[in-house]
Length: 129
Image: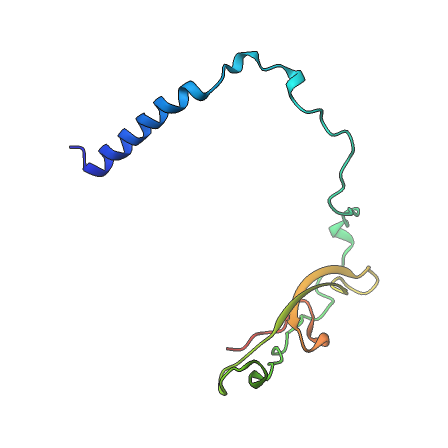
């Protein structure tokens, strides 16, 4: 059995289809001249570098980074009640040595404390809550 909701949806769709049909022009006469010319310039979205051969990267020679706690921002400056952890966090792009020594630094995005520029690291500092 049709519910009232299904009936109203069906009626609305049917009515919309009947109203839209006369507004649509005949699309059989569309020609290629009506289309904009393709862009011939090559757009570079980002700089590409050749991939590294994974077999030449020494494995397990760099110690695992254990990130420290993110520095808290004094909440009294922002009107935050005492006893509540308050962080001001920013995101930045920077270069950091991720691969073993001898390889170039890697460009990474990471977050850190907006008030402590030295807190930007990859992996990022830990937010304690």
